[in-house]
Image 1: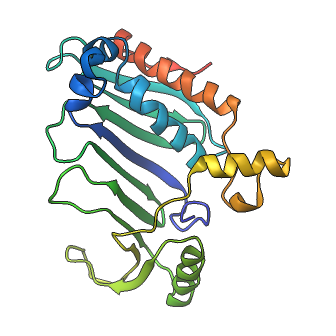
Image 2 (image 1 turned 30 degrees about the vertical axis):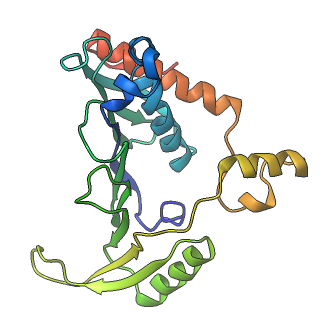
Image 3 (image 1 turned 135 degrees about the vertical axis):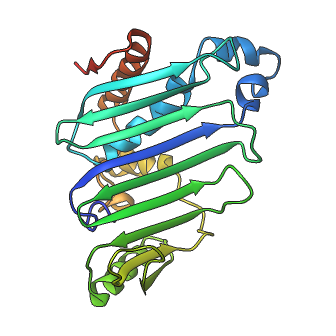
Length: 246
């Protein structure tokens, strides 16, 4: 919603981490865990989700090239991680990274942050360590309280409990007040995407009433697009060069 409404302005850069506990490649599939992980990777298993999400968030922008690195130092039988830059045809640059060698309390850690010319959005969706908690915060350059309250109500209608704040940053040059939307750590359970897809089938239209205002639902074309991105990430890391998406 925050990106759709243009509250960040033109987003120029962002980053996302989707990391797994090291127990995933070692034990998640029981006795066949090592064999399964050896034929997969964090690019196939995790960055497929992340690249698909980035395309959805910034549609109609498309990824036109990637540059990625990988390493094989911990597991040995599967890449420890992939770290990639996605270059969009709008000039947007996003860094997406996924590793599965973390020793942490949680099974998954998922974090996103996007910076535009009018604000920054920070979303710690799934904390991996107990010292953190789930949180979302969006800070803006200049947004009147009346507009913040309107967006607060719109987000509330979508099930997100957010608070409006006008604060003075702890570290800023020249002072000033920073408008902010901050989401509660505890959120109601999210509706499964499958529910909306079923509604689309039942209603006979690509966007069902339950998903209205949230963009498109994914299609097979989107599945193909994220697969091309993942393949390019692997190729780029192996060849140590930028790879174009064709």
